[in-house]
Amino acid sequence: MKMQEVRKIAKEWGIKTGRMNKGDVIRQIQRTEGNFPCFGTAIAGICDQQNCMWQKQCLTASVKTA
Image 1 (tube, helix red, strand yellow):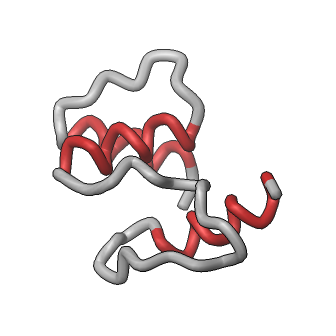
Image 2: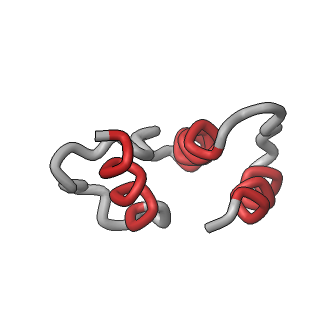
């Protein structure tokens, strides 16, 4: 998902994104949804958040930061 789309979702939740990077915006959306703010932090490609809309992107981001 592109940053523009992420910002649109954030706006729908009433989140001001300012100068936040994509990961920070997604983590703030996760907090607002009542979920764990864990985007990009999966270790060894393991994630137990099966209902998270960011899971696929999260696992990809986790591999890049490892």
